[in-house]
Length: 139
View 1: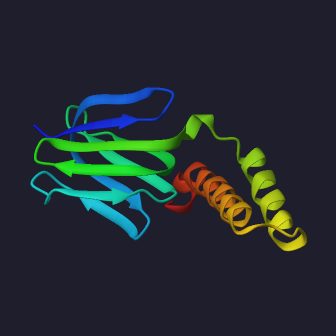
View 2 (view 1 turned 135 degrees about the vertical axis):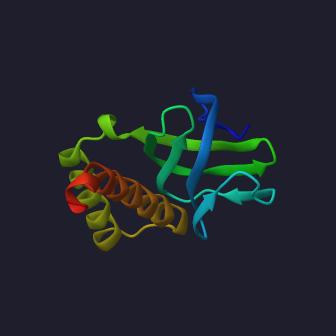
């Protein structure tokens, strides 16, 4: 049994879901986790989380941002600051967020912390656009 737990500060998104694989965005790149993966802890980056549900073989995808991932012999535990499912993303709103963040980055005098936060917001919005348009690009 290889299980996934996916939590945000607000809710338990997935609890004890049997999976066959997870692709997790970390700050150092995507990590593909299969049963038997060496135990590890990683800082999450902003990107698209994917995992395959064992029972149905379907793939779950969502944009996550910041947090931690723990891999152990029983499975994967993900604690993320935020999660957006594909159906929760408005491409128009995400494009507006990217444009606003880019304008802020180029026109305003920001502290390092404000700069990093604005950059993260832009990346999260861009990953949302990528997730919404994913099926279009692959056909």
